[in-house]
Length: 115
Image 1 (cartoon, rainbow, N blue to C red):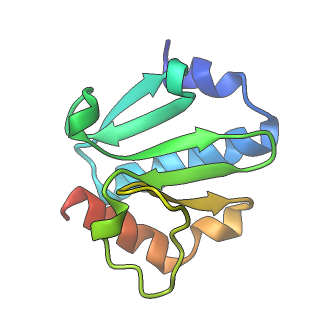
Image 2 (image 1 turned 180 degrees about the horizontal axis):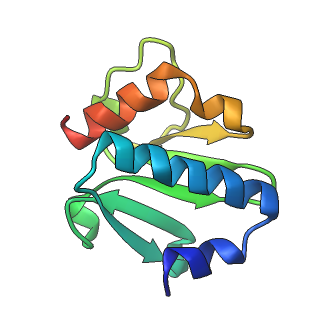
């Protein structure tokens, strides 16, 4: 399954959010590898297709999406954007395009990618 096929099953609003997020991830990390994980209902990004190579993911829901980070507890988050209580995982809820315009989103992606 391609990312486009995966996203075609999402609501139009969430599809737009996910497509913009994909664009930003590629701008921050031009060499990123995108993986489609229908079983986990996400698109994952990193240096390869295996989970140990991922640093972030997009998880769509009905009216929003999560931009998640696999080692989020190790990332600088002075604005407190990251949510969650997992041992390592955290996410940022993206409800509208304006949420993606926050400079800290790009900073989190760059830190997660090691850029």
